[in-house]
Image (tube, rainbow, N blue to C red):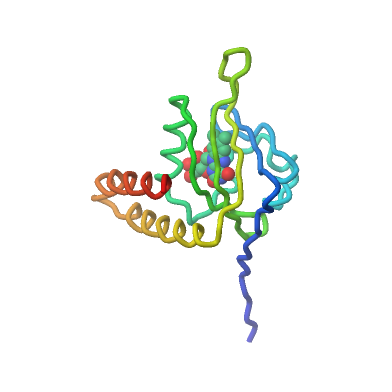
Length: 159
Ligand SMILES: Cc1cc2nc3c(=O)[nH]c(=O)nc-3n(C[C@H](O)[C@H](O)[C@H](O)COP(=O)(O)O)c2cc1C
């Protein structure tokens, strides 16, 4: 008998480096810095032109991204914790600030700048996101739950 294992290894984001990407208004990646490529396990050319959800981790609740898009589309900065999926199936946690890039007074793109997350925060947010996801996966009561959980998520993200 053969036993196989899936490895889901965490990659630690270095303290002294920022992970940067930019997207067009539809969320397609237009730029990544070297640290982004290194941490995600992709080459820059594998990412440019792809929707940013190439690195979406299945543990992320839908409501987090709904909140992200609503926030940046009205011109505000979204801040929050994101678990991303590496090319090799592993993952990494970041604290992201997503905002609009303004050039000559005109909105041209979105950008995200990310920092490392403490171990305690990762555990707290993983628990929160697990709860959000299990509630989002419901059917008839989903709208009510998403609303309630958005409030809770907002509080947790601000804490
Ligand atoms: C500037 C910017 C950066 C983003 N960065 C990420 C990211 O690092 N990881 C991620 O999963 N989604 C990121 N998103 C959100 C994705 O566009 C997408 O909404 C999300 O992955 C959920 O994908 P889905 O709606 O297809 O499920 C980013 C969006 C923008 C505008």
